[in-house]
Image 1: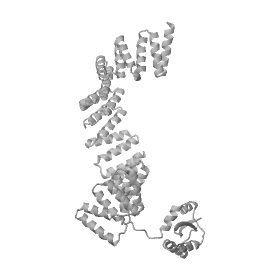
Image 2: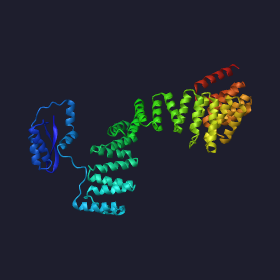
Image 3: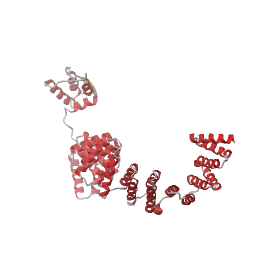
Length: 489
């Protein structure tokens, strides 16, 4: 079992092997020799290494792996030396120059301070100059220039903790989280592991979707500063991302106990219950937040969705209407989809109420595609209510808006077929068949019309073409039935 100790040889650094040691007089001498070897000529280091006395060890195999790791050994040897300062030094002349800079800053003469700092900067000058210049740029919101100067400072003095911290802050401000992570980690490695640094580290990890590391960082921030809510909120969000909803509920309850008037905490708790597949509990919270007067467009839409799934259609449409009362920006697609779901569930009355509210809320701002969706939905509701003439009117309006709407053309064909107007029905089916994506469905409808009129031979080519375009088992069976009937005639 071997460890490593540094020795100098002809101006280069080499690795030599020694045995581990126990504490005592011998080890004290060795420690002194290690420290001196980093400062004295190579002969002393060589003599020290050669005088190491091998002894037995009681370390386990796992402990040996750690001990033999080169990084651990390097860190262990460095631990015998006093900690290097985390602030760079300045010479007497540099101190005089810096005093002039500080005088400019105290007099709010930032331009003169910047000019003097830039003139004083060289590769040999103290990193304090780069750091001070970076601070001025940071204060002036010149983030790119500030980052460059902080980088120059840490290149000159890698243990400059304040420079690393401010560099990390800039990267957070610029949303460059992949760059912020090593900077903030370096601050912690240099002994600057305060709550804010851990909290920002957690935020950066969460922003790059490393939620396990974010959780660890937030836990440390909470340990050091349990009073700050932001760290606990961050921890709860990491639980959401990891789908650990039970733990998210526990954290949310703690947060709510401290600040029961914060709607965002209640909404976070509701989302956790949805994640736990407890939508009724979530609905209760959404209703409570609405009574607080702090519901959001998203929370009301989610409440409506829960009510639909629970078959409480009247409550669902009321939730959607409350959401529309908030004058949502953008398109109406989200609400139209909800109206379609209501219609599909047979809640025609509620679907019609929602459509009317959508048209009232969006008015002329509704887009052409959304307008078509609303009209198609109205046509289906008209069919369900037996109002055939209203259906035709709506469908013709859709076709007028978009002559290539195959779905509307097929629905018109079906409507005329039900009325016994085969000529008009065929006209609309053929128009729909000329549209590639609707050709198969249109030919099937056309064939069904022909079969209904006893024209089996004319229907067969249409069905075969439909199967060629889009093979379906049920249509294949229908085709075979028509073929048998046609042969038997």
